[in-house]
Length: 144
Image (cartoon, rainbow, N blue to C red; front, side, top):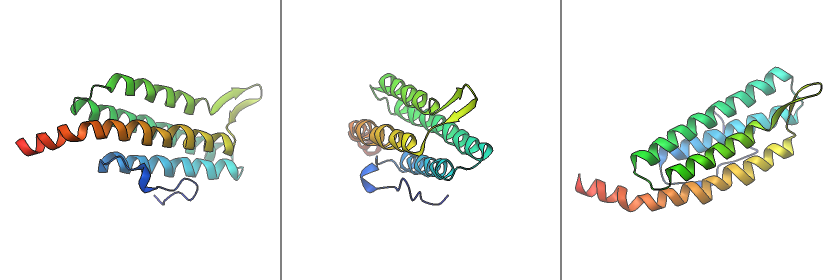
């Protein structure tokens, strides 16, 4: 997948785990594809496919990330799961049934979700949880 021109990856988003960071990059790329489709006024099927891909990958990523926190014995797993559910519900709300059929978000609404929910989650939540685990991860490696 090509880097997203709309939502480019920045070093400040880095969590510190290669797998999680790669998944975060993919989320931004998928959001960028959806943004392009909506902004260009693409047909329903193209927008629906882009939206479905973003939703599916978001759910897969959150599941992988939660399992990582469980395996690392993080104390904040349940809080993180709740945040993930909220973010997913907000994403799903960007597509809804209107009186004349399915309605998708505007490019600005998608940008708002990506910049104020998804990216903020990377920086404020994921980085914090990973930093709190880093001493434990280093101790486990040293004792192995």
